[in-house]
Length: 292
Image 1: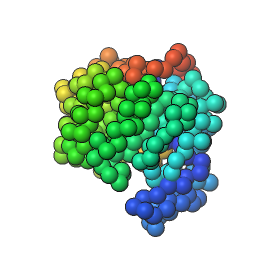
Image 2 (image 1 turned 90 degrees about the vertical axis):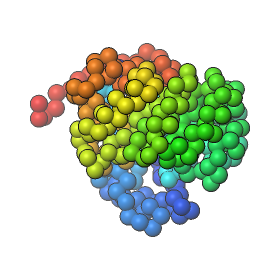
Image 3 (image 1 turned 45 degrees about the vertical axis):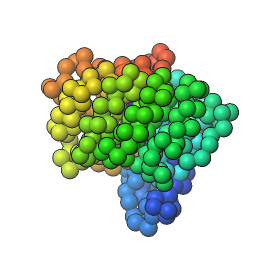
Image 4 (image 1 turned 120 degrees about the horizontal axis):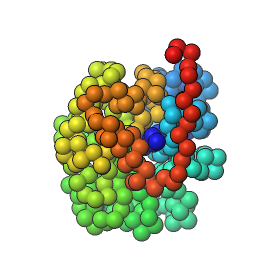
């Protein structure tokens, strides 16, 4: 069973970057704060990044479950994600978006976790945002956080982990693995309820491209720091699909000779099943494609 710990959905996209709007266009493109960017694969024609498209990709790649995280550049997708969860309750966990203001308990109770865009916070001192950590801990939710580059926020995170030792925290983007100091983020997973997910790792090693040998080396380095039981696979769908297919985002791990079969099973699904609390799920049927 495979679980994707880092995906995105939006309908519609209505975010901001550096105070400027992000506006969906056609052909998978967006006006990204005044710059034209290929935000999605070009066949996503109408600017909508829907759950139906994601599920089709997951079925083809034989991915059983997913975690829907969020980003300021897409705008809050809370309401849409609640609709998605109603359609596919067994296959997904969803995060509401923390936007540096309180979240009502009644609203948070409808979600599985909270997404914090640590690198995009106006005040990047995580201690200032302690209330959302305490609220998530009190309500049994998890925190999904993409931290600022390197070790900028790791000391503050260590303090928060000490205050809320039972709070589940998933650190995204594999600790921003291509930036100096990334190992400090990985080392946070030495704490019992902190895990690392690899959403965006193919983006970070995009200049090297498939099959991402340096990404595999980084996974091995992370195993040496915190152990394989604390690492989870994530695709960062759909933005990374502008360069590769969804299946390729995990295929380079499945085909690697530098990871054992046990390590692959844990990384691709077993650890996420434990961390996020997924129930019993089906493994999508293998469909022979036209080039096989």
